[in-house]
Amino acid sequence: MLAVFDPTVAKCPEGLRSPPVAGSAAAAAANQNPLVPRLFGAVNDIFCLFQGHIENIANLKQHYGLSKTANEVTILIEAYRTLRDRGPVPASQVVRDLSGKFAFILYDTLSKSTFVAADADGSIPFFWGVDSENHLVFSDDAGLLKTGCGNSYAPFPKGCFYTTSGGLQSFEHPLHEVKAVPRVDSQGQMCGSTFKVDSESKKKQDASIPRVGSAADWSNQF
Image (cartoon, rainbow, N blue to C red; front, side, top):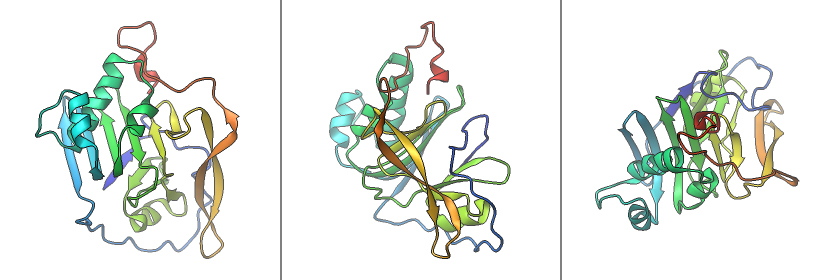
């Protein structure tokens, strides 16, 4: 699983980039784990790459009015379209409603918006980093990111989601800010940052998506 986004689409979070270190390791092969299947799909210029499985898939199909043949990718695309077209609904609630082991990357080509998340337990190996050209990179292969991003990579924070305009947020604690904590590897080198919920800081409200056609441009909120 690999996605690379231009900085005009997805900006690098503060703290993820680290000073370069010589001698990066070679990339490992990205082999798919049969226990955490990988799915890809597209609907109306919305593309989604999903890894893992959702346990409450039957309830979500009913909630979004989808057919029995719908899979995780179909559900996520429909959930995103609901957020985009019929809001305002907190994006954190949509991710919080997903029960299972998962990581996903969604991209809306019309609005050039991203929606990325990992489950609350960090069950799926999932990483992100920033390369030399300031592209934000997501992958399930740590070796691939270490080669492409040097030491400017880290595990994607569990229980969090990332959107183009909202940046990194916690869906478990949506009213609290997420702060970067410097990460040191086994050799004592600075290597990206881990991101943790700051229990002492609070937002005014949970982020939501304005309805299409409102005075506000929803694409700038997602």
